Structure formats: structure tokens, C-alpha cells
Length: 237
Image 1 (cartoon, rainbow, N blue to C red):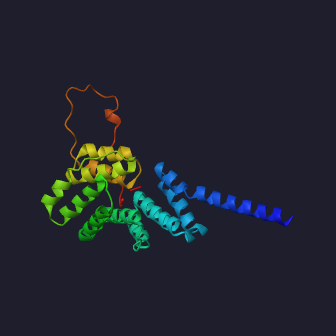
Image 2 (cartoon, rainbow, N blue to C red):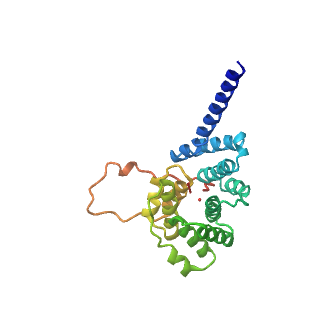
Image 3 (cartoon, helix red, strand yellow):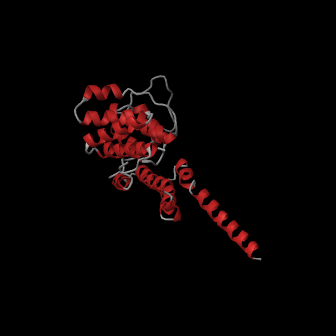
């Protein structure tokens, strides 16, 4: 009888753990769907659960909170969350946090020297993505180092994930006022900080010249540009 009871308790324990292990994958799944707020809440739940006792799970959840705040446009909140990860020694997580820190600072147009230090440390830790070179270009230009910035701003863009592509497209489009890149950023991650920022920049660009070969569009009189959202502010999965 005691043996049967012990087996039952052990089974319940494993079911409990399996449930929460599965729960730990939910934030990334929600993030992949572009549901930033839901992903953040799911990550916050994990960071506050018993799983916080496992350092890797706890730190991963905190990073996801910072990342989702970034996509939501809460850049200050993202930076504050990253402070709890400042001492991490895991190279992959260190890369992700420093890259996201630099992206936040560039989008805030603040502390370019700190942004440059962060992105260069990130790139030295592991192979890096195209948006990292573009973040570095923005920091360099803000510091007046235009020639160095221009060399980096020509980085090609690989389609890794739609969120990484949105970041890369936005940073390159913002660097050169490139309409095609800004439009691509909007399409890659609608509703994200990059989409809102790209929409604001697109609204400020001169209208493209008319295409003489194109016929009249029935939609033309009805298209109204969305106004830039006041206070809208916008890193990586």
C-alpha cells in the first residue's frame, strides 16, 4: 500500500514537472506569433514560479520579458529588465542581452558610446546577425564617425526570422531613409516597435514619384497614411 502511494506521488510529481516544462516553451511560441504582451505575461509567470530556482530557466524568462517589452515599445522597461542579467556569464545570453541593450539605446537616441560598447561586446562573443552591424552603424554615426558607419550600413540582410529581419530592415531604412526597407519592416512585424517607427519615418518621407506606366488605382483616393503614434518607442530571438 505504501509502495503504491509512493509510486502515485512520484507520478504526480513527474506530471507536475512535465506540465511546467511544457509551459516554459509558451513565451517563445507566443513571441513567434507576434503576441508580445501575451508572451511577456507568460515569461513573467515563469520568472515568478518555482522554475526560477533553475538559473538557466530564470534568466531565459527574464530575457524574454526584456525582449517582449522591447517589441512592445517599452524601451526603458526593457533596459531595466536587462539590468538583472548584467552579470550573466552564459555567452549566448550575454550576446543577446548586450545586443538588445544596444538596440534599445539606439532607438532611444541615447548614450551612443554605451550602445557602441554593448554591440561590439555582443559581436565579439559569437557569430552575429546583420542587424548588429546596422545597430553599430547608427551608434557610430551618432558619435560622428560617419565613414565607419557608412561601411557597416551596407550590410546585407538575411531572412532568419521575421522579427530579426524587421529589426535589420528598420535600422538600414532609418540610416539611409530607404523607403523599401522601411516598408519591409512594417510588413515583417506588424504592430511591433519597428513597424511603428518605420511608419512614422515613411510618413515623413517625400511621396514617391508617380509610375507613368501604372494604370489608375481604385484604391488611390481611399488610402490615408496612418499618423505616427505620439510617444511611440521601440534586440532578437
